[in-house]
Structure formats: C-alpha cells, structure tokens
Amino acid sequence: MAPRSGVLIPLYIYPVRGAWDPLYAVIQSHPSLDFTIVINPASGPGAAPLPDANYTREIPRLNSYSNVRTVGYVAIDYGRRSIDAAYSDIAQYATWSQKNPKLAMQGIFLDESPQLADDHNTTFLADVKSRIRSTNGLASGSIGMFMNPGSIPESRILGTTDRTVVFEEQYQTYINRQAAKSLAALPDREMLVCLMHSIPSSMEMPQLKTLVAELRELAGSLFLTDLSENYYNRFSPRFKDFIDAMI
Image 1 (cartoon, rainbow, N blue to C red):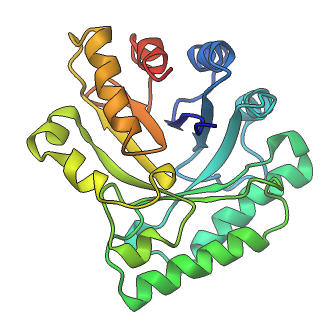
Image 2: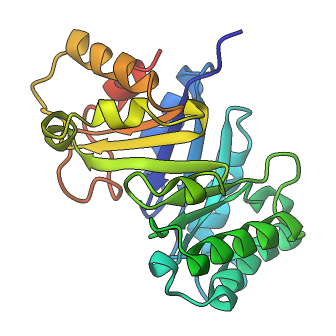
C-alpha cells in the first residue's frame, strides 16, 4: 500500500470564529490526506495554564478529525535556547490535556532548530526528544518531534527527529538552486517536509499538480502557498487548490 500523503500547516492564524473554516473545509473534503497542524498561540504555548477561549474552542474541533494531529510550537533559537526553557514550553502543552483531554497535542514542532551537528546541538536535540517522549500529557500513540532548521541539516542531526523540514523557501529559490537534486539524495523521504511559498499565482492546476508530484517524490509532507509574506498567518485564496493538487 502506498503511503498516505501528508500536509503540514504552520497555523499561526488567531482563531476568532470562522477564521479556521478554510482549514476545516479541506480536512473534511480530503480524508485521504493526513494533516499535521502546528498550533502556536504565543510563539509557544503562552504563560497561562490554558490558551484563551478561542483556542480552547477550536483545538478540540481539530482533534476530532481522524486525519489530523496537532503539534505544539516551540522555538529553540537554533540551539541557543536553554534546554530547561524549551522543556518548560513542552511541559506547558502537556498540561493542556491534563485540564481537558480534547486539547492534547500529539507532538512538538521545534522551530529555529540547528543545522550543524556539533556536540552541543546533537546533545540538545537528543535531550529534547527524550523529554518529549517521557512527558505525560502529550497524546499517546503518535507522539513525535518535528524539527525545522529550514534547510537540510547535517546528517547526524537529520536522524534525531521524527520529521524534519528540509526546505522552507520560495518557489523561485527551489528552481534556481535546483533543490530537487539535493533533496533527492536524502534518505527516508517520508520523514522529510517541504514548505514552499511564493508559488506564481498564475500557475494553473496542471502545472501545480506536476510540481506537487515532484515534491511528493522528495518529501512525505508538504505545505504550498502563493503568498509571499505572512504566509503562515492567513490562508491564500488558492488554499484549496494547493490541497486539491496533492490528491
């Protein structure tokens, strides 16, 4: 059986009523796609025991879908942040489910993760992964650590996480750098993620499907948008087209 296609969406859109409706629409209409949704209330979980009422209303709705898993956002400043500070955020996400099981995160998304595999970085990531896996309160059965260095990290780091963002650039950069060649050389395609923005808004569906087919040979999970700024803070008018192109 072929692996299911994955979509990873860094969802930094504040959930006033109706704000996430485009997301719910594609989740419901594409049951064959697996959606990983990055939840980021305040560049992390925020200081309060629970996120505000808008998040506590909408996260359970996301978690009710069988093809969705939600993961909590934690920034680690390219390995410069202290392990205790990073773990404080992880533990904060875990407390959500202790107060309301429907708020459970099913993994952690480490943004601004390091690329260099020096002793500090490899030890840091191994420690974070160990703490994630041993933390009570994250949803059981699918706990994972996602890492976003934004480009291909050194191989010793690449193998430390469950999913790694190996491309986070605009479409033209992908073309100019012939990035497909570098990505094709990486192992474990299903563990890789590509985030691509600034796709030409004039690109028609046949060309978009060709691009997606190429990217699906390189990475197990994708995010695509034609927006060139604030692309994680709003949905493109073509959001559904990009999801449709993945099936």
